[in-house]
Amino acid sequence: MSEIISELDSQKKLGQMFSRACEYAIKIMIYIAANEQEGKRTGLKEVTEAIGSPEAFTAKILQQLVKNDLLLSFRGPTGGFVLNDKKEIRLHDVVVAIDGTHLIDDCVLGLNKCSNTNPCPVHDKFLMVKDQLTETLLSTRVNDEALLNGRNILKN
Amino acid sequence: MSEIISELDSQKKLGQMFSRACEYAIKIMIYIAANEQEGKRTGLKEVTEAIGSPEAFTAKILQQLVKNDLLLSFRGPTGGFVLNDKKEIRLHDVVVAIDGTHLIDDCVLGLNKCSNTNPCPVHDKFLMVKDQLTETLLSTRVNDEALLNGRNILKN
DNA sequence: ATAATTTCGGACAAAACTATCCTTAATTAG
DNA sequence: CTAATTAAGGATAGTTTTGTCCGAAATTAT
Image (tube, rainbow over all chains, first blue to last red; front, side, top):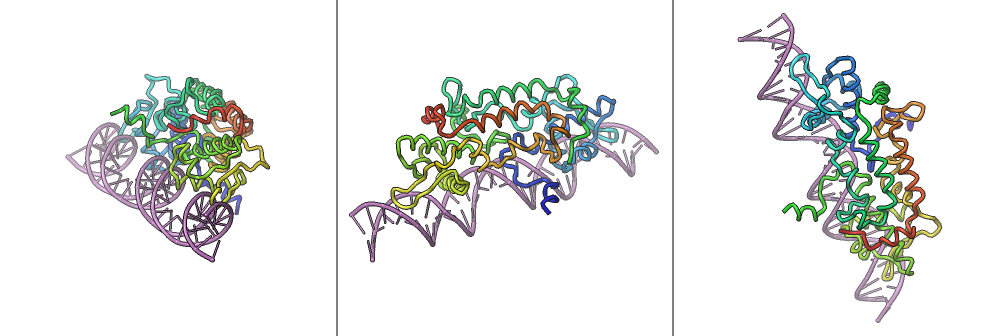
């Protein structure tokens, strides 16, 4: 029984790094980037199947990625999505488009007035963590070689 | 107008590091630890006032911290909460008690089967971030000198 | 043109998280 | 013993996030 449960998506997902929508978004971008290396445009159904996400919800996320100029969309048969090549799209762009800048910019304790000059009690303890996170998000592109190599591992 | 809004707690808080409840919990623990250094027991109303949190919700969080053996509670006049001194309580304990281990243990993309030997596309990119985060949570005690010094900065 | 396909977008539903209300139980002081 | 005070806990409401449904708009192929 417990083995079965562990196979399913657990319900309580309080306090994860990214929202569920953002997890999907990152997977989407990696899958589309990988597809694109082979000159292929990617449709909703295909990406939904590839990453194991609910179709209608995935459509909403795709729309948001288009609105944020990370993707270009085309309708009709042969339609689908491609990366907006005008940008070198980083994980940072994807996360900001879906989750906003809270994880990156906000105080760990949610204080508005927290800053380097007026730090909350844990501010200094988390400086390295937040720097490391920001650096990782900024320096990793969605079409990074290392990411595309892992394209097969996008769903359970 | 925008200045006024920035003073208030913004509603949309998608993708922050910790849940709202967990933010409160960390503040609670720091405040109680600071109070305790002066030999004082801390009541619900006092801590609610100190950290600027909703009282009934804060009560629930305190209950959960008691259930997880991080706090001891006493009823009646002169009642309140103190740290469970049998433990050297770390931030890690507080976060796990409220948010569970998702942030620390789970795959960044939410994959069940992701591991060092079967990594998701971004697994390696986030190794340092997660190590740094885990190390910070494990090595910081709620009665850490540096944290107690910042006890005045717990609400907006 | 017509039909089939695909994205867009509004409305709605379900689940999780945040927050409130109110009664009970325990403890202390008078 | 009684009244006052404080935590415990069940029930419920509000908000956000996640997820679904369905019709409209655009594009392609026949």
